[in-house]
Amino acid sequence: MTRYLARRLVLAIVVVLLVTVVTFILLHLLPGGPARGVLGVKATAEQIAAFNEANGFNKPLPLQYWDYLLRLLHGDLGSSYTMNEDVTTLLAERLPKTLLLTVTSTLLATVIALPLGSWQATRRGKAVDHAATGVSFVLYATPVFFLSLLLIIVFAQLLPVFPAQAAQGEDIGTLLSQPASLVLPIVAGTGVTLAVLGRYMRSSTVDNLAEDYVRSARARGTSERAILWRHVWPNSLTSVVAMLGYYVPVIFSGSLVVESMFNYPGIGLLFWTAARNADFPVLLGVVLVIAIATVTGALLADVAQLLIDPRVRMPARAAA
Image 1 (cartoon, rainbow, N blue to C red):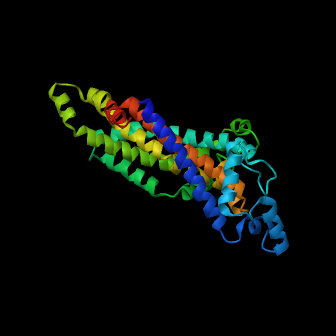
Image 2: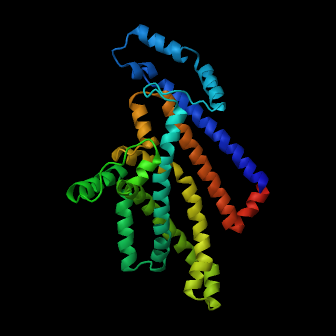
Image 3: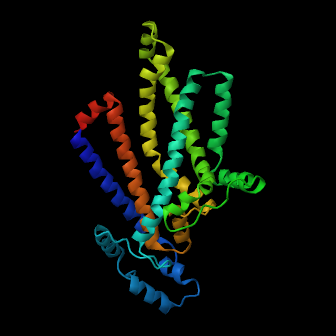
Protein backbone atom coordinates (compact mmCIF):
# COMPACT_ATOMS: atom_id res chain seq x y z
CA MET A 1 0.00 0.00 0.00
CA THR A 2 2.90 2.36 0.79
CA ARG A 3 4.43 1.79 -2.65
CA TYR A 4 1.03 2.31 -4.25
CA LEU A 5 0.57 5.64 -2.47
CA ALA A 6 4.16 6.66 -3.34
CA ARG A 7 3.41 5.99 -7.02
CA ARG A 8 0.22 8.02 -6.79
CA LEU A 9 2.18 10.87 -5.16
CA VAL A 10 4.80 10.87 -7.93
CA LEU A 11 2.02 10.81 -10.54
CA ALA A 12 0.37 13.77 -8.81
CA ILE A 13 3.60 15.80 -8.98
CA VAL A 14 3.95 14.98 -12.69
CA VAL A 15 0.36 16.06 -13.33
CA VAL A 16 0.93 19.40 -11.55
CA LEU A 17 4.07 20.03 -13.64
CA LEU A 18 2.20 19.21 -16.85
CA VAL A 19 -0.57 21.63 -15.87
CA THR A 20 2.01 24.40 -15.34
CA VAL A 21 3.59 23.64 -18.74
CA VAL A 22 0.26 23.75 -20.59
CA THR A 23 -0.91 26.88 -18.74
CA PHE A 24 2.43 28.61 -19.33
CA ILE A 25 2.28 27.91 -23.08
CA LEU A 26 -1.38 28.91 -23.45
CA LEU A 27 -0.89 32.20 -21.61
CA HIS A 28 2.06 33.11 -23.79
CA LEU A 29 0.08 32.29 -26.95
CA LEU A 30 -2.56 34.90 -26.11
CA PRO A 31 -2.57 37.76 -28.64
CA GLY A 32 -0.76 40.84 -27.44
CA GLY A 33 0.97 39.07 -24.57
CA PRO A 34 1.23 40.41 -21.03
CA ALA A 35 2.81 43.71 -22.11
CA ARG A 36 -0.26 44.79 -24.05
CA GLY A 37 -2.57 43.69 -21.22
CA VAL A 38 -0.61 45.55 -18.54
CA LEU A 39 0.40 48.67 -20.48
CA GLY A 40 -2.81 49.02 -22.46
CA VAL A 41 -3.60 49.29 -26.16
CA LYS A 42 -1.95 52.72 -26.44
CA ALA A 43 1.47 51.47 -25.33
CA THR A 44 4.26 52.22 -27.78
CA ALA A 45 6.56 49.61 -29.28
CA GLU A 46 9.41 50.95 -27.15
CA GLN A 47 7.38 50.58 -23.94
CA ILE A 48 6.39 47.02 -24.87
CA ALA A 49 9.99 46.14 -25.66
CA ALA A 50 11.15 47.59 -22.33
CA PHE A 51 8.47 45.63 -20.46
CA ASN A 52 9.42 42.38 -22.20
CA GLU A 53 13.11 43.01 -21.48
CA ALA A 54 12.46 43.74 -17.80
CA ASN A 55 10.30 40.62 -17.32
CA GLY A 56 12.30 38.22 -19.47
CA PHE A 57 9.63 37.80 -22.17
CA ASN A 58 12.19 38.34 -24.92
CA LYS A 59 13.81 34.98 -24.10
CA PRO A 60 12.80 31.71 -25.85
CA LEU A 61 9.68 30.16 -24.27
CA PRO A 62 11.42 26.98 -22.95
CA LEU A 63 14.02 29.18 -21.22
CA GLN A 64 11.25 31.34 -19.72
CA TYR A 65 9.56 28.22 -18.33
CA TRP A 66 12.85 26.92 -16.96
CA ASP A 67 13.42 30.23 -15.14
CA TYR A 68 9.84 30.05 -13.78
CA LEU A 69 10.40 26.47 -12.62
CA LEU A 70 13.64 27.39 -10.84
CA ARG A 71 11.88 30.25 -9.02
CA LEU A 72 8.99 27.92 -8.21
CA LEU A 73 11.36 25.41 -6.58
CA HIS A 74 12.48 28.23 -4.26
CA GLY A 75 8.89 29.17 -3.43
CA ASP A 76 8.98 32.30 -5.57
CA LEU A 77 5.83 32.72 -7.67
CA GLY A 78 6.84 36.15 -8.92
CA SER A 79 5.24 39.54 -8.40
CA SER A 80 1.92 40.84 -9.66
CA TYR A 81 2.26 43.32 -12.53
CA THR A 82 -0.74 45.36 -11.38
CA MET A 83 -1.09 44.86 -7.60
CA ASN A 84 2.52 45.53 -6.56
CA GLU A 85 2.62 42.48 -4.27
CA ASP A 86 4.21 39.04 -4.31
CA VAL A 87 1.92 36.37 -5.73
CA THR A 88 2.71 34.20 -2.71
CA THR A 89 1.44 36.94 -0.39
CA LEU A 90 -1.70 37.46 -2.47
CA LEU A 91 -2.46 33.73 -2.49
CA ALA A 92 -1.74 33.42 1.25
CA GLU A 93 -4.27 36.19 1.92
CA ARG A 94 -6.98 34.89 -0.44
CA LEU A 95 -6.67 31.10 -0.21
CA PRO A 96 -8.01 30.74 3.39
CA LYS A 97 -11.10 32.70 2.36
CA THR A 98 -11.71 30.48 -0.66
CA LEU A 99 -11.16 27.36 1.46
CA LEU A 100 -13.67 28.69 3.99
CA LEU A 101 -16.23 29.05 1.21
CA THR A 102 -15.54 25.79 -0.65
CA VAL A 103 -15.04 23.54 2.38
CA THR A 104 -18.14 24.87 4.16
CA SER A 105 -20.27 24.54 1.01
CA THR A 106 -19.00 21.04 0.27
CA LEU A 107 -19.48 19.82 3.85
CA LEU A 108 -22.98 21.27 3.96
CA ALA A 109 -23.87 19.68 0.62
CA THR A 110 -22.42 16.32 1.72
CA VAL A 111 -24.23 16.28 5.07
CA ILE A 112 -27.56 16.93 3.32
CA ALA A 113 -27.03 14.88 0.13
CA LEU A 114 -25.88 11.55 1.56
CA PRO A 115 -28.89 10.82 3.82
CA LEU A 116 -31.23 12.44 1.29
CA GLY A 117 -29.96 10.21 -1.53
CA SER A 118 -30.28 7.08 0.61
CA TRP A 119 -33.76 8.13 1.75
CA GLN A 120 -34.84 8.63 -1.87
CA ALA A 121 -33.44 5.24 -2.89
CA THR A 122 -35.49 3.43 -0.23
CA ARG A 123 -38.61 5.20 -1.55
CA ARG A 124 -37.79 4.72 -5.23
CA GLY A 125 -40.73 5.37 -7.55
CA LYS A 126 -42.89 7.03 -4.89
CA ALA A 127 -44.19 10.60 -5.03
CA VAL A 128 -41.59 11.95 -2.59
CA ASP A 129 -38.80 10.42 -4.70
CA HIS A 130 -40.16 12.03 -7.88
CA ALA A 131 -40.53 15.37 -6.10
CA ALA A 132 -36.98 15.30 -4.71
CA THR A 133 -35.64 14.16 -8.11
CA GLY A 134 -37.41 17.05 -9.84
CA VAL A 135 -35.97 19.58 -7.41
CA SER A 136 -32.45 18.15 -7.79
CA PHE A 137 -32.72 18.23 -11.62
CA VAL A 138 -33.79 21.89 -11.52
CA LEU A 139 -30.95 22.69 -9.13
CA TYR A 140 -28.44 20.75 -11.26
CA ALA A 141 -29.54 22.52 -14.45
CA THR A 142 -29.35 25.97 -12.86
CA PRO A 143 -26.06 27.74 -13.65
CA VAL A 144 -24.17 28.96 -10.60
CA PHE A 145 -24.24 32.56 -11.76
CA PHE A 146 -28.02 32.44 -12.22
CA LEU A 147 -28.54 30.87 -8.80
CA SER A 148 -26.30 33.55 -7.27
CA LEU A 149 -28.22 36.30 -9.07
CA LEU A 150 -31.54 34.81 -7.92
CA LEU A 151 -30.36 34.72 -4.30
CA ILE A 152 -29.23 38.35 -4.51
CA ILE A 153 -32.55 39.52 -5.97
CA VAL A 154 -34.69 37.59 -3.48
CA PHE A 155 -32.71 37.74 -0.23
CA ALA A 156 -30.77 40.97 -0.64
CA GLN A 157 -33.15 43.19 -2.61
CA LEU A 158 -36.78 42.01 -2.31
CA LEU A 159 -36.28 40.63 1.23
CA PRO A 160 -33.23 42.46 2.57
CA VAL A 161 -32.24 39.68 4.96
CA PHE A 162 -28.63 39.14 3.91
CA PRO A 163 -26.07 41.48 2.28
CA ALA A 164 -25.37 40.98 -1.42
CA GLN A 165 -21.65 41.55 -0.96
CA ALA A 166 -19.23 39.60 1.21
CA ALA A 167 -17.32 41.43 3.94
CA GLN A 168 -14.07 42.95 2.70
CA GLY A 169 -10.76 42.80 4.53
CA GLU A 170 -7.24 41.42 4.35
CA ASP A 171 -7.67 38.68 6.94
CA ILE A 172 -10.23 35.92 7.28
CA GLY A 173 -11.32 37.32 10.66
CA THR A 174 -13.16 40.13 8.88
CA LEU A 175 -15.28 37.58 7.03
CA LEU A 176 -16.00 35.58 10.17
CA SER A 177 -16.92 38.72 12.10
CA GLN A 178 -19.81 39.26 9.68
CA PRO A 179 -21.34 35.77 9.26
CA ALA A 180 -24.50 37.13 7.59
CA SER A 181 -22.39 38.15 4.59
CA LEU A 182 -21.30 34.52 4.14
CA VAL A 183 -24.80 33.05 3.93
CA LEU A 184 -25.63 33.75 0.29
CA PRO A 185 -22.19 32.76 -1.13
CA ILE A 186 -22.28 29.49 0.84
CA VAL A 187 -25.86 28.70 -0.25
CA ALA A 188 -24.92 29.39 -3.89
CA GLY A 189 -21.84 27.17 -3.59
CA THR A 190 -23.84 24.41 -1.93
CA GLY A 191 -26.62 24.26 -4.54
CA VAL A 192 -25.06 22.42 -7.48
CA THR A 193 -22.84 20.19 -5.33
CA LEU A 194 -25.89 19.13 -3.32
CA ALA A 195 -27.77 18.15 -6.48
CA VAL A 196 -24.83 16.16 -7.90
CA LEU A 197 -23.99 14.32 -4.68
CA GLY A 198 -27.66 13.59 -3.95
CA ARG A 199 -28.26 12.10 -7.39
CA TYR A 200 -25.05 10.06 -7.22
CA MET A 201 -25.83 8.74 -3.73
CA ARG A 202 -29.36 7.79 -4.79
CA SER A 203 -28.14 5.89 -7.88
CA SER A 204 -25.39 4.15 -5.94
CA THR A 205 -27.80 3.10 -3.17
CA VAL A 206 -30.39 1.84 -5.68
CA ASP A 207 -27.70 -0.29 -7.39
CA ASN A 208 -26.49 -1.74 -4.10
CA LEU A 209 -30.03 -2.54 -2.92
CA ALA A 210 -30.36 -4.79 -5.98
CA GLU A 211 -27.18 -6.77 -5.20
CA ASP A 212 -27.22 -10.43 -4.17
CA TYR A 213 -25.75 -9.74 -0.72
CA VAL A 214 -28.82 -7.64 0.08
CA ARG A 215 -31.14 -10.47 -0.96
CA SER A 216 -29.11 -12.87 1.19
CA ALA A 217 -29.36 -10.52 4.17
CA ARG A 218 -33.12 -10.25 3.73
CA ALA A 219 -33.38 -14.03 3.48
CA ARG A 220 -31.55 -14.29 6.82
CA GLY A 221 -34.19 -12.01 8.36
CA THR A 222 -31.99 -8.92 8.68
CA SER A 223 -34.07 -5.78 9.11
CA GLU A 224 -34.24 -3.22 6.31
CA ARG A 225 -32.66 -0.59 8.58
CA ALA A 226 -29.70 -2.88 9.34
CA ILE A 227 -29.28 -3.76 5.65
CA LEU A 228 -29.25 -0.11 4.70
CA TRP A 229 -26.83 1.18 7.35
CA ARG A 230 -24.53 -1.84 7.83
CA HIS A 231 -24.23 -3.12 4.26
CA VAL A 232 -25.56 -0.74 1.63
CA TRP A 233 -24.41 2.60 3.12
CA PRO A 234 -20.65 1.75 3.26
CA ASN A 235 -20.64 0.40 -0.31
CA SER A 236 -22.57 3.39 -1.63
CA LEU A 237 -20.34 5.78 0.30
CA THR A 238 -17.21 4.39 -1.39
CA SER A 239 -18.40 5.49 -4.82
CA VAL A 240 -19.47 8.91 -3.58
CA VAL A 241 -16.15 9.52 -1.81
CA ALA A 242 -14.27 8.66 -5.01
CA MET A 243 -16.47 10.95 -7.04
CA LEU A 244 -16.11 13.77 -4.51
CA GLY A 245 -12.32 13.61 -4.72
CA TYR A 246 -12.36 14.03 -8.49
CA TYR A 247 -15.05 16.73 -8.18
CA VAL A 248 -12.60 19.22 -6.64
CA PRO A 249 -11.93 21.17 -9.88
CA VAL A 250 -15.67 21.59 -10.43
CA ILE A 251 -16.05 22.88 -6.86
CA PHE A 252 -13.24 25.38 -7.41
CA SER A 253 -14.71 26.43 -10.77
CA GLY A 254 -18.02 27.08 -9.05
CA SER A 255 -16.29 29.12 -6.37
CA LEU A 256 -14.71 31.33 -9.07
CA VAL A 257 -18.19 32.29 -10.26
CA VAL A 258 -19.64 32.66 -6.75
CA GLU A 259 -16.77 34.89 -5.65
CA SER A 260 -17.17 37.17 -8.65
CA MET A 261 -20.94 37.42 -8.12
CA PHE A 262 -20.72 38.29 -4.40
CA ASN A 263 -17.43 40.24 -4.61
CA TYR A 264 -16.02 37.59 -2.27
CA PRO A 265 -12.29 38.33 -1.68
CA GLY A 266 -10.93 34.85 -2.49
CA ILE A 267 -8.64 33.48 -5.18
CA GLY A 268 -11.58 33.29 -7.61
CA LEU A 269 -12.02 37.06 -7.56
CA LEU A 270 -8.23 37.40 -7.70
CA PHE A 271 -8.21 35.19 -10.83
CA TRP A 272 -10.85 37.29 -12.62
CA THR A 273 -9.02 40.51 -11.79
CA ALA A 274 -5.73 39.06 -13.03
CA ALA A 275 -7.37 37.73 -16.21
CA ARG A 276 -8.73 41.18 -17.08
CA ASN A 277 -5.25 42.70 -16.68
CA ALA A 278 -3.23 39.83 -18.25
CA ASP A 279 -1.37 39.51 -14.94
CA PHE A 280 0.48 36.29 -15.85
CA PRO A 281 2.25 35.61 -12.51
CA VAL A 282 -1.07 35.76 -10.62
CA LEU A 283 -2.86 33.60 -13.21
CA LEU A 284 -0.10 30.99 -13.05
CA GLY A 285 -0.19 31.06 -9.25
CA VAL A 286 -3.97 30.52 -9.07
CA VAL A 287 -3.85 27.71 -11.65
CA LEU A 288 -1.02 26.07 -9.68
CA VAL A 289 -3.08 26.20 -6.46
CA ILE A 290 -6.13 24.69 -8.19
CA ALA A 291 -3.98 21.96 -9.80
CA ILE A 292 -2.46 21.05 -6.42
CA ALA A 293 -5.93 21.02 -4.82
CA THR A 294 -7.22 18.77 -7.61
CA VAL A 295 -4.49 16.14 -7.38
CA THR A 296 -4.64 16.29 -3.57
CA GLY A 297 -8.39 15.67 -3.71
CA ALA A 298 -7.88 12.70 -6.03
CA LEU A 299 -5.13 11.31 -3.79
CA LEU A 300 -7.26 11.69 -0.65
CA ALA A 301 -10.16 10.01 -2.45
CA ASP A 302 -7.92 7.03 -3.26
CA VAL A 303 -6.74 6.81 0.35
CA ALA A 304 -10.31 7.05 1.65
CA GLN A 305 -11.38 4.27 -0.72
CA LEU A 306 -8.54 2.08 0.52
CA LEU A 307 -9.60 2.66 4.12
CA ILE A 308 -13.35 2.26 3.58
CA ASP A 309 -13.56 -0.61 1.10
CA PRO A 310 -11.39 -3.71 1.63
CA ARG A 311 -12.08 -4.80 -1.98
CA VAL A 312 -10.06 -1.84 -3.26
CA ARG A 313 -6.98 -2.85 -1.28
CA MET A 314 -6.43 -6.00 -3.34
CA PRO A 315 -5.88 -4.24 -6.69
CA ALA A 316 -3.76 -1.67 -4.83
CA ARG A 317 -1.52 -4.42 -3.45
CA ALA A 318 -1.28 -5.97 -6.92
CA ALA A 319 -0.33 -2.59 -8.42
CA ALA A 320 2.33 -2.12 -5.74
